Image 1 (cartoon, rainbow, N blue to C red):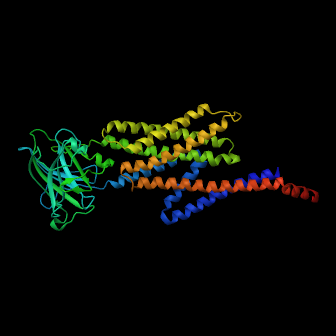
Image 2 (image 1 turned 135 degrees about the vertical axis):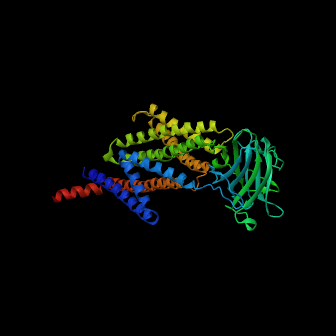
Image 3 (image 1 turned 30 degrees about the vertical axis):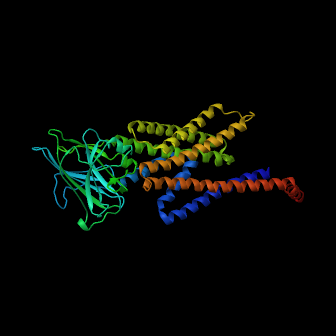
Length: 454
């Protein structure tokens, strides 16, 4: 009995020391970066020990996710340029672009300027109008880029027919079907300006519109390369694929075609980052490390099952939103992200169904069930975390505060796992050494010797 009590006391002391060491480690780390990281770690630690802290943790993570996108929206519009003054302006929802315009109802003439920026010294920037719908195919565009021969900025008309979208043939300049009265492009800095990453550009156009038709489908984008006089395909991030807007130039009202889609994407990202990226790894952690704390009893199992089921059901909601987004975005396909999502969801469903067929501890098939449960569980966690990072790439948020917040939370959990794993091996080695000494009679001999002396 004394040896057993000593072992239990040693085990609990080692766990406590491990948490203290981990706490001290992250405190040092936070002092060199930000005090918030330290408090974030405390919340995660309390989540592992106190279920009541779960809502506080999720609320904080939700704020972090929302903080990133808000900081990225910094574009503003202006009605004054170096050559003209316009009546109205509007900030466009992607690429930090904006437009300003003056509409003359008496002759249905539209004076407009588009404000964009280059993403490459050899790139292009384009703006256009789609006469039928807010999409790329069918757009009549003005595309500006440096002339391959002279290096001077040129703006040429292009029609984006279906063959361009399928990349069956290069995009060649040709006259527009629209009644284009004039067009030009200038860069900030005038003729001395050079095209570079981030260089601002203004594309001017004067068009004769159809009378009594004031709702215009605007399409804009930018690319990395121009081959000869043929602009190449633009990047395929979510912001680039949804750079469209329907604007009533008379009233100034908007109908951004991707408002609902963008809202669903944000919800999809937040829910899946919390469920597949945080809760499921937490559930795996509780099963591997908390089960060895004897003072917890069977509580570790209820914590493990509760966290995993909550994560899976929340992830199911995120998965359903992803399916809906696919239906709302025809032609927009993220193959790897989609495959990883289906894989993680199927594995999560198999894990949930495994609870219904869990054998008793005395059943001879119990060991096979445990092997299956461990393999599928860890595979689901890995796929979920990888797909969260893939989701950041899809959203174009690879350098956002949202990704930073997720990386910090994941790094915290990994740090705790490493400390717990080291602690488990220390306890295992200590127990093995005590067992060896017991077999050799060293522990028993000293206990008997002490008894005779008493």
